[in-house]
Amino acid sequence: MQKTNSVRSSEIRALRRMKDREIDTTDIPPALDWSKAVVGKFYRPIKKPLTIRLDADVLAWLKGQGRGYQTRINALLRSAMLTANSNPSTRSRR
Image 1 (cartoon, rainbow, N blue to C red):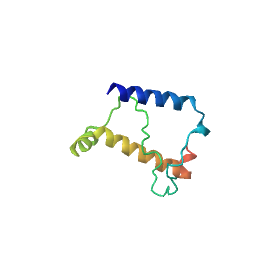
Image 2 (cartoon, rainbow, N blue to C red):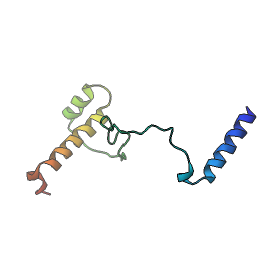
Image 3 (cartoon, rainbow, N blue to C red):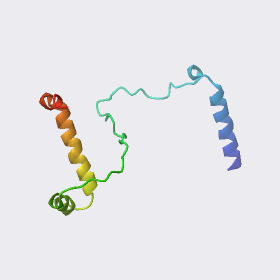
Image 4 (tube, rainbow, N blue to C red):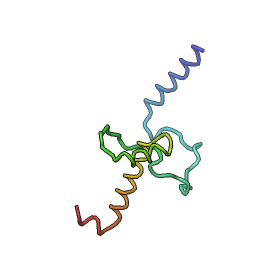
């Protein structure tokens, strides 16, 4: 086990000393088909803690749908934000 780690460490040191153009990448297949790529798949917006006051019936409705009512609130607000941003008549009100 120790020999493997020392061999791997020496290979890594040798690669670090090499310039990018010196590294042989011919065995890496080209990625030509990006049709199934998803933009922003791993992007998660930063969450901010917030206290809001909701009508009791609205909160009961959200909680009545099961766990994740705060996530649903966020999704509803995001949908409203995207709709407002795509609608030219609402942009002039800002």
